[in-house]
Length: 451
Ligand code: NDP
Image 1 (tube, rainbow, N blue to C red):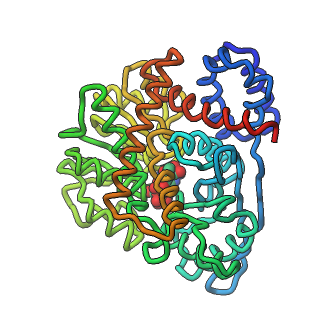
Image 2: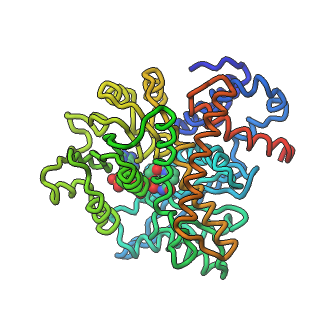
Image 3: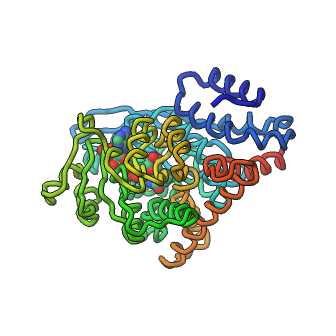
């Protein structure tokens, strides 16, 4: 889509020239700037005060060497990152990703989106993100521990409970969070809530493990109800089989849906009777096995390897699709296949999983669409609730946290819908989420001056 506003057009050109080769970052910024067209028409002071220019430039980007020892005594060196993007409304908050594909562009796109997502939660948290190009897959526990300790030894200089509070993301689960928290505590001699997603015995919050997946379903449920539909009886396809995918599958099942397909980077499984989630949890959370192992235990199910001629997970007929694996995993042709097979709702559990071309297909076809910034905000919202409990030195019950999470997700849907309507984009939750998230941060930035 071309920009109507010369200001936004020129700004986008400058961002591309200034951040060469960072295609994921450009993609994330372009989507937000497109949504802001109607806002800058009515708020010219945002241009005068350089608010949008400041917003697209990280406050700080830290990049560091992470040396670690393998079990047989060889030294490997990975690259670590932390982008502290915007602290206008609170301490930087956002996950750490350990995956070989991690680079500056990916960390910046994730950190940029985090600003608006965190704002949408209604909680006082700024935007940040980090990670390393390290692959925990195939490493021993001892190797993962040494990597996490080395990573935290450097990162600890830059974070703190009132400065920057990281969490998990792809490749960073309870094991990695535990090792990093242990190292921070050892270096600083303090038990503060400096990282969220901690174990329940040392400051973690109930519902944090489930929060992103459950929150995605609470949001999707609101979106469906608003259109006179529900999860009950719907056939649902979910990509990925990590933290977000598993708990989205669990909550959608509880709400009456039948989950028919899940995947990992090796391929996807299809089980017409409904996926056996207890089996998936055992394979993924306990054995750290590949999803292909599912069919060994459930011979009536099928496994289709990635890159197969017979298509990918988006070719499976479904009513609702929840992409929960990674960025740009659902392309235009996949969107067409979903629409042709009758899919009527898509909500993003992963960050930026649908390409702009795929989103255009959904929007033209009238498919209900829940964008990541709104739909997957439940994880960071519950992380912020973990921070609150740590500050109080207190633990809330499961129901208290779950109830707060549900209310936050319902409010995000309401606020995004209302902003879309107010700025002439009724029903467009992408524009609504971007605008609602932006306005709060922009007003805070204006109030704090050029800093
Ligand atoms: P996990 O590491 O727990 O799981 C990731 C899943 O996605 C795995 O099944 C993995 O398969 C698959 N996957 C990852 N990369 C690729 C790829 N390049 N191609 C195909 N499949 C891939 O991560 P999470 O569940 O925590 O995160 C998933 C998504 O949700 C990410 O986009 C993340 O940023 C987003 N998110 C996560 C939040 C959280 O609280 N955890 C909060 C908000 C968003 P394999 O094991 O084979 O690599």
